[in-house]
Length: 310
Length: 308
Image (cartoon, rainbow over all chains, first blue to last red; front, side, top):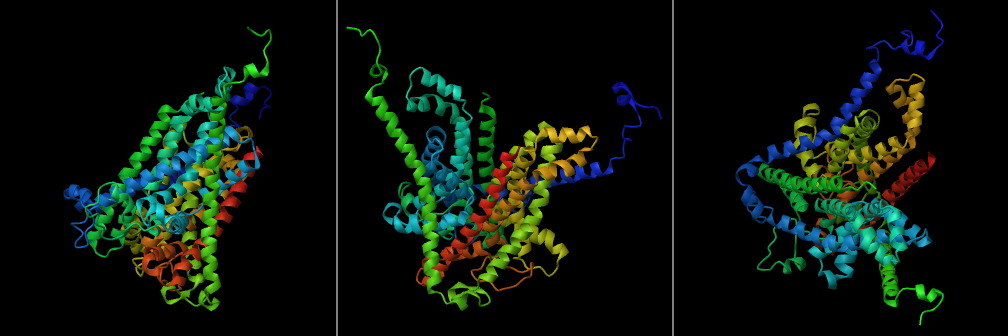
């Protein structure tokens, strides 16, 4: 074998080239990884397919009735998810009203005002810990504080108490995504505004917030989608699992009356015995999956569409 | 008359603008204080409720076999064993596929594939847990598990664990992928320069370098699995009572599903003070466990960020 002396010799040397087709371990490893990825993402398709097949009786013939009627104790065929959809939208509305202003304001404080003060570090640590608290523990908070302690404001187990509970739950998500959004705004923008004599509030309200708005909005929508699918805390703060009568209450009065939510209704369908309730559970699962996936898809699309490259 | 030189007072803005700027500062700080208040209220709620429970319950009642809160039997071992079993099954499902997906996306996937798969993972993370509960009893148990285990109960811990695992995959995949991408490109290039294949680079170079991050992903995923409620309530621990058993083919309640079951009857339970208070005791346990796990995971992730 000749001695390789120049780079050109090395590059063309057959002795150093790996034989083609010999990398069995590499191929096996790669295909294992592909398999894991397909499993991790593909189960969503299986999930949707199973729910559509199981719920087909309702989805194909009875969908309109299912979407526009309330719960019925008499038979599965009469029961619908109308009250759940309304309740979920109302809860999401209350959640947004409480969580968005507080969450975004906290993020602004952390990014724009706090200069690594002790208070700011406490807030940051606190947000990270809150993000990991299991959802059902927020239900305990809602039960003890929002339902019982401030009963005068929430009127007990109502949409308002439920919405406030979920607001506490999604608060860390909104803070974290808003902090990221604000940090992405380049400091040259702020400095230019200060340079022409703006006050801190003017810099924020006229330059920084408009620049970060689309990303903040995306985070908010994702957080509300999370709230839309959550059932555990709502069970503790008294979302009705059974029959629910609005009576002749108007839209405003339903905020302070008994309520239910779509995921809570699915839970109720799932635990009632009998195959026809199972069909309802599957059909309602399709409804909530479509709802949540659509909201999420929209948020992700908006982010990719409006994401600014500074 | 114009002054011949400017003073500091001339450059100062109007009082109104300054006051407005100062006021909003306090508003933002107030909002930040609210987030701390939320934590304080959670801790106060679970701690005071748990204390009421501990100070009233006879300790033998905490170790008698079985969880029957309405009969005054609060055997914690039953719930803890079920929680541990279901979480371990969940991790057995979620860790291999989460790590696999993370390695594929970080080390192998074409950027275009990655751009599609990352949002898909985010989308998966938003699947409501009740839906996975329904999936467990309508598909995992009847269509898959019964083919392998004929003696399996309709409600069982195995299906619940698998469904929780599916729920945790996106979380683990996402944290792991961040950890893998934090490994500097120079390490991979140096490895390739020495003639290593991609599989060698992945296993001998990237894996050890990202090890602590992958551990953090596992810990945070485990914490999420322990806290998962609806899947377990629907697929395994539907009732408000639970007998001690180790079989994965039988039903069994966890810390979380016991809380949901107690919560479903909060109106009735309110009379029986101790059963109601046990709800807060379980909440305190759950809160403490997940807090410790998350803090450990958080410390590891932070250390990793500062390493390179």
